[in-house]
Image (tube, rainbow, N blue to C red; front, side):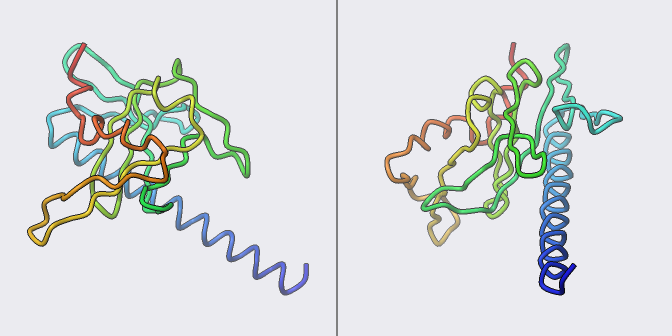
Length: 164
């Protein structure tokens, strides 16, 4: 292997490790947020399941996949919705899980999205909010005609895991 290929491989490896650690931190943040809201959270023993956590609220058990992003595309956050297998990005099936919990790291906010809404997509575009000086959101910013606003009802929609 040449020196250039070696550098590229170690750079790619470091990038992959950074992405994995970032995802792990968002999983920890999910457990903290969910338990602070009164949910009971369990982690499957193996990593072969298509979901990261089982969340209990009363009589219901929900299978939850955690995703995180700080990647900005235009005026939206860009989220990959598939399972990462090398370069492949196969989609999840709605029968495999109940919710996606998407952590928007720069805003420290969450979207709690039903799997039936997310599974048809490889990527989601979620709106960025701009803030006033006092930290309150000003207005939602559209992204080049994409229907990113359709997901706004799911921002901080933790109540969905209490219903049914």
